[in-house]
Image (cartoon, rainbow, N blue to C red; front, side, top):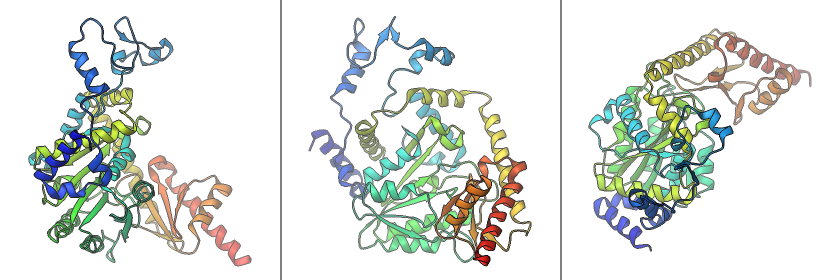
Length: 436
């Protein structure tokens, strides 16, 4: 084993043996090289005043070389903020500003100890880092049965972890805390669990209320007290898009410092929050009362980044940084959030009209981009295909009966027509069935 990696592992095991035991075999083997191209280039950047022939970029007139046809379209940005490689951890100013943003939007974090966010290539990359660092074959990864399908690819297919699901809602149509708690405690023999909490939930658009949130935290505490080491991951892709009386903060703040056997990990980003999906700018943060633990996890995270993408895209990090610095940022974001809330409220108003009750019911939603219909009589995939072919309407079929609708991309004035067409599609299929 590399001496640096061995040192990181020994430091982490000494500082918190529970967190060390959470690491996967890859997590225990990975490290960020201190003696290599990056470190030597960094040293040269400080000392090579005459010629710096270290890093693999091209210079011209002492600034990064570029094509004018590209720079003409990006002329408001300096070449140094676009063309060189970004640091593997991301632009330092962006990381610092994102951390300040997290504390401002999550007051629970003000007195908590957590790492400087590390830039990722959006949230999928952040979740992939979590999987690489912590998930080994047969480790239990726990999340609701209504979930983003990429979890299966990220944790199940790539890392061969054991996927454990539970119903998202209980009989009161609230978050199923009892199901989560049972799934966690069932891992007592294994002694380890990775718990993924995604609120607002994709695909349902549901965020728990404050009391549900407290119970979720207590369920994770119960698992830790039962001797289970828990990696508690908050997938906050749709954070801040809260439209009703629900949690307004990430559970990361409540999970931070909860127990020595709980490692809270926050995966978030500008992707959905700031409406910059194609920029692919995300972040991963670790909470620990020990700054030493934070440092070791940061170094191992940088090792994963170095071994996969090397570093994230510099231009999009610059764009997000400048947006966060803008005095107009908060107002413009609030304006877009109001539009999203209007679409969500209109969706609920249309669905509550009663005219579709024979065809479906809908799962509770109060946030995010999506909602889900539970079809009563027709197969979801059959309806999805029919809507495309007959009416040019796109939806997502999930399982036998669930149809996901992204109200986020439908103008408020068009929402009723959308659901009228979905309803007509149901009637078409029922008529065809009756006459066949």
